[in-house]
Length: 71
Image 1 (tube, one colour):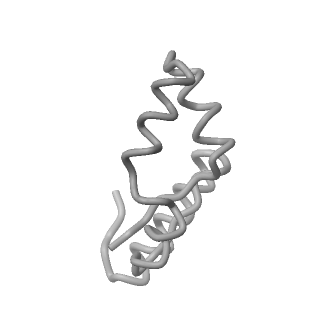
Image 2 (cartoon, rainbow, N blue to C red):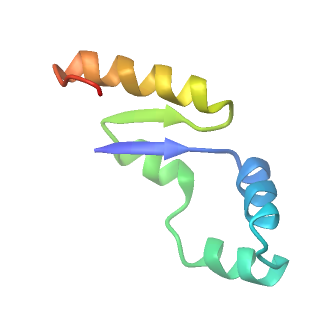
Image 3 (cartoon, helix red, strand yellow):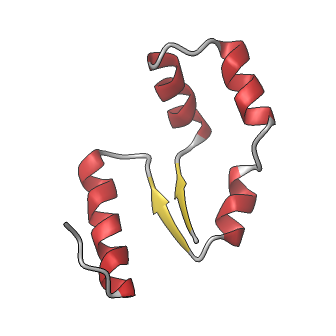
């Protein structure tokens, strides 16, 4: 399994930019498994705290490890 992680601060900022209220964000967070547990359960973790290029690089590295051809 792959976990794509982002810090709470990054998640919050992105959800606010997408038009979600603080109450909606807190409600969504309360219904999800904590990120720390998701990371522990994952076989691979991709950090989504940076740029889309950084995420793409990590994804391509993972594809290489798994023998998957990227598009």
